[in-house]
Length: 196
Image (cartoon, rainbow, N blue to C red; front, side, top):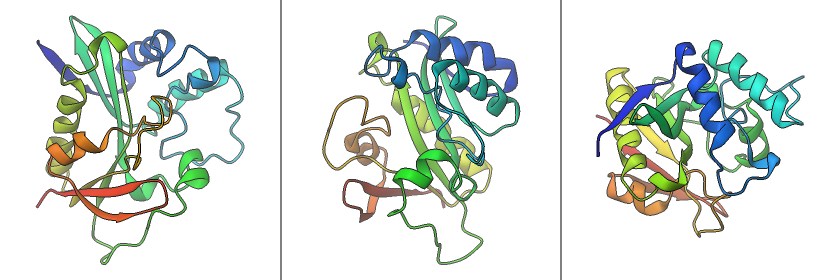
């Protein structure tokens, strides 16, 4: 299967939005159409995420401003997967970090340490279990290493809840990709892979 991975850029905005318009994460409910706006390097103050339309508009704005960062997977010229990967220290003011990640450490042993965080995976239902997430993750490693990051960090749930709650990727994916558990929060493993 020939899967192509492309880094998100403003030129890919239309394709990114179409993927989220048409691809259910876990359900077809509007509240699950997130457009990945809650995980980005933008400050949430004053932003309105209350409807699908507003989140879609914010996604276009955030892509243009390089606030949402990550990778799209293409199969036969169609987007079939997404991985949100951003600089950890740039994302502490985003919606989900403020509301759900307070137990994850933000201090590093040295201020020079750079960490790339994996915040979300979304794969089209018909493409699941075909290695799309693994290919997206490999591209994150390649680019993060080229950009002088020290680690890639991930936050899988300790136990499977459901697809809507397990958007950060499964533990097994990270174990197979060379991540190790650094510590645990009440609900998550905090895992890292060294790029040095």
